[in-house]
Length: 541
Image 1 (cartoon, one colour):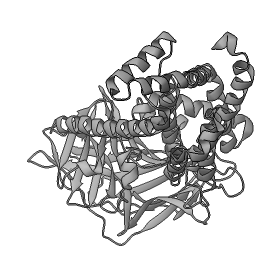
Image 2: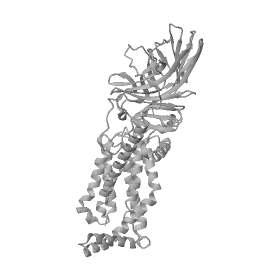
Image 3: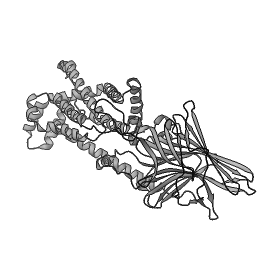
Image 4: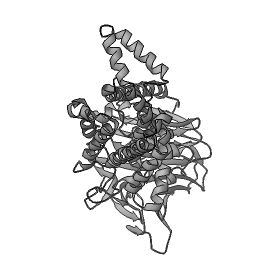
């Protein structure tokens, strides 16, 4: 017999095993894919990226959502602040995505490459650009801002790099112009890359790693038939590289809530690459095919870069398959509808905490019939408790016989002893899917609920919600127990509520709020099931 006293313990052990199995499964599958993927599919090699150690000559470009510092020596973005996002919930200062410091190195490089006689693409010395101003700001009556960087070399070649920005957008379009005013043909290759110091990335806790609930932080790309490929920073060994010729795609660096992505726009294809330099610097990017610019002619190329939050609607419109960048893991088919439903409720109440309450009630209403069948099955099992005790006394020295007779009794009464556990198992994927939504959706970052809950994506600072959730679990178990005397000496009854309270301590408060409301609604539903159905036992039991 499966005693209900140990049912929750069995359920918890099953959950631990399930999450552990999924964790191992994903790691093994990823290892196989990674092993087969990191091959040199391009015969072209690229030299190691250079680090700009020259004195910075910075200009600032700002819109309503972005503040960028561009170094005129190379025309690269070395500092980027997101003006609609705070660094911390209770502190002043904007969130910094790009920076050029020893303890925080993350920048964008772009420009012109050249090919030597050994078919190796090398970076030229950084071009020093000139501008008409050191400060560019989007005017209130304008929706676009264009900034042109110009450099005229001694041999007569002119390079221009133009940044196109729009109001409310984190997408920056970059055009590189080359004017060949010489009597010789020029060979040019356009590139764009992201460089990041990955040795200082904070490691995840053991709890998140064990349950595989950590958010992905690494490299991703899409290339022709490869819809969405992830590469962890840890999976790139020192001095390892990867090149892939493609016709259409993108390459990005992901982190929790935020994203940088290159979207090249070349009609004749290009190459994307991943490069690990030493043990601290990771570089990813693209370079075009060789362009031959005839004497006294010109050429231009265009590409776009996203520097900002991972806003699902806007990012999905950047290019083909960019909707996959919002990586909800193996439960994406549940997480995506949950986010859209959550956004629907938010459009009415304008509070993400209330939206979580509404979506919880909606899910409970949709699964009411399942909950009712679960509760009625438990009541039927309780009704047979006397007969079960009689079987135990009759075959006290034969455990197999006891289990066999009990199962025969359940079969004769048309009872499935596992039916009371199925609804709980069904709720686990919803629980995990909502976890990914709350930890990945930037819309919920620093989203307040009320009073002390000022960030639904972070844990409850006073642990009030986890405590209330533990109490609600206890309330469910008490409402399930028909014999009040049994409550006074059943110590096992209190184990699961305590474990659940501890389990939820460091989870996002939005997720704990979901489970708290879920339990409260469950208690209310059980009350009405008792009142409406259990009173008429002759018709139901």
